[in-house]
Image 1 (spheres, rainbow, N blue to C red):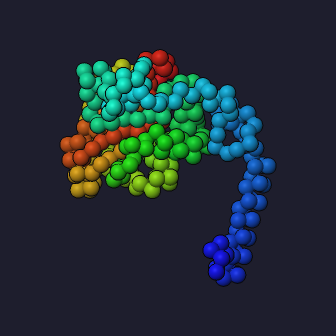
Image 2: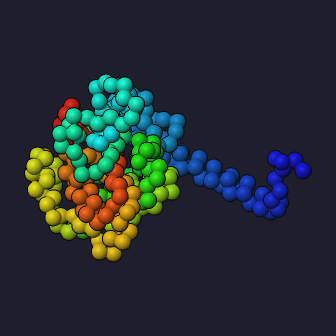
Image 3: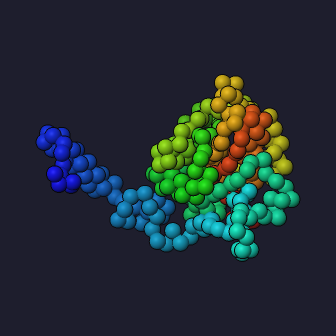
Length: 268
């Protein structure tokens, strides 16, 4: 028998072809009604979930060399054969083990994240998921589950979604790593972190996050990847990592869409 021959029943093969045809037709209709546009500047494109060339060039993706602990870009490759740790991470080691971010918090990434987070624009979710899965390859390789940074219930009620949980869901769709959104609880409603210094953010988060009682058994000995949209000073990730460590997590890594560096600190 020819190895390429379709051995499915004729009815099943016909149904499959019809389904593909219907999906293709629906997509063509949707593309006519909702034109394919750049997710940032809305320039017409020929593909879904993408940026135009001009916007793409403005995204400062983080690639090696980078600090293994903080996920920040390094100015040059020192030729080390293993993970490189920056002077900043050595001077003030973070609460987590490793961090990765897709890009620096520059203008295009800022607009995309703010539109997603505050403008209820979710059209970039699939692109975000692909970016995160790529940037977090090392962290996700043997992770047990993804833990989104939590929102307090009042902020969740106002926003109607937790952006970190949506991002974790997109990563899970690609990698099949489960998401556990009930591990961490934000038990104190804190003011917005925007514009606060690192010390103010740390004080703001004191006692704000805890492990859910029912999740403690799952955390003990687990390899966890904490998901957030932006690492600004690292205070939120540190507060989450601290309680995860106390609960017995074996490894805590952080994966975010963007990280704020000295050159991208405006408008955070």
